[in-house]
Image (cartoon, rainbow, N blue to C red; front, top):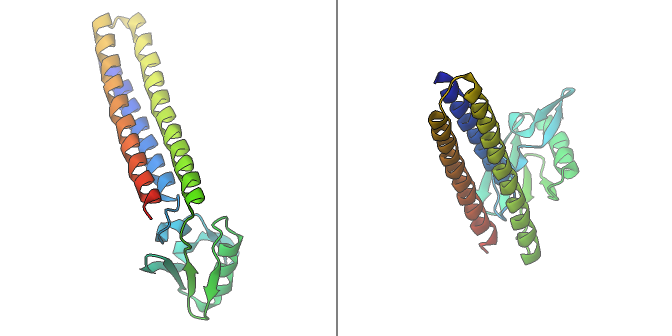
Length: 186
């Protein structure tokens, strides 16, 4: 019996990881507002090693359309500016010698639709991960039939895994819906 519980827990853990991944990827899709986590994937050359920008500077949002990057060491301004320019964010940094300001341009209708499409793609990847976790768990549970586990226990376990799948897919749908609303809000 503990084998079945193990596989159910394993499936649940994998589904939760899929949810976290979807949350993370959706958070990095720009919705027209300045958010400090937009720069999380940018790395700066910090004394010879690639370091996340948030470990060499503070990133704040003075208003809804502006990001402000204030390095802890002034000599890092140029490196940070170069890293932002070379990133795929398409932002134009303004360096005033103290801080770097990034103005976030408003999104066009066409760009909003592209971002919604990208969000749907990420959500679908999350749903696929959840369904793969379900499939793996069910495969392992079915193998237990050969090890003197009753059919009723297997059916009950498969039903539990399906309920988990439904729950996590619904969470992904909810995340996607919120992100779509955020992107389409002008």
